[in-house]
Length: 75
Image 1 (cartoon, rainbow, N blue to C red):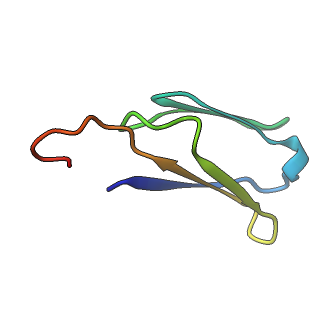
Image 2: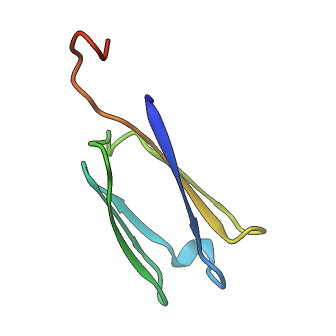
């Protein structure tokens, strides 16, 4: 897969309350009521991810691009 998506339910949360930090192998999410430190299964391109908050569903969708070296399998 070139990318993967993470969906996080955040009931009773506003967009302005969300702090999101993505590093090469870690996603750090903080709100006033919740904290999530998620170790990712792959190295990701932390500078080119996308996140959107669906307020009706109270869900944060984070799409991250997998960063992998090219070899004879991944080209």
